[in-house]
Image (tube, rainbow, N blue to C red; front, top):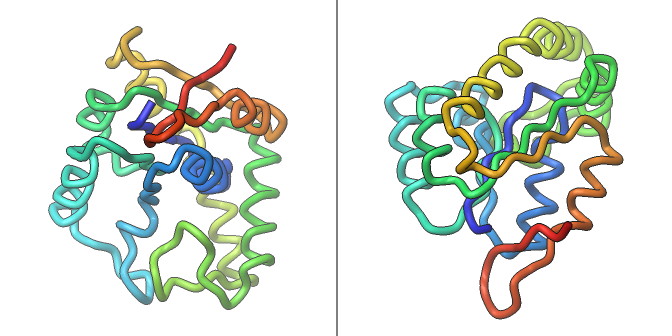
Length: 183
C-alpha cells in the first residue's frame, strides 16, 4: 500500500497515526492542517486547497491525513487504504485538551507553520468544535466509504489500542516504499 487516506475529526489521533505509519513505510505524510493554514491561522482559499490536494494525490506515494471533503472522493479513487480514526467523544475531547496543553505556545506536529497552540480560552473553542463537528466528520467518512465500495480497503480504528495494533500489522516492503497489512 502506497496511498493512504486517514480520516477523523479533530483530536481523534489522525496526525499521530499518519506520522508513525509514514515513518514505518517510508511514505510522505501530508497533513490537511498544514496545507489549509498559513501563518497566523489564515485559511487558504478552497481553490488553492483543491489544487494542492490534487497535486499531492496525483503522486504515487502518499499518506494524506485530514478532511478537505471537496476533493475527498478523488483521493478515495486513488487510495489503496482508508483509515477512519473514530474514538469515543470523551477520548476525542480529552485529546484536544491534552494537545493544547502539551503544545502551548508551539506549533504542534501536523499543523501549519506559524499556527501556535494556546492553552486557555482557545482550548474551550477547540473542544466545542470537536464535540459539535464529530457527527459531521463521521457522516463524511461513511459517505466516502460507501461511495468507494469494496475496492478501497478500510481500517476503522476506535481506540489507541486498536491504532497500535494496526501499526504492528503493517510490514514495510523491503527496498521500496509502502507496506503490507498482515493478518
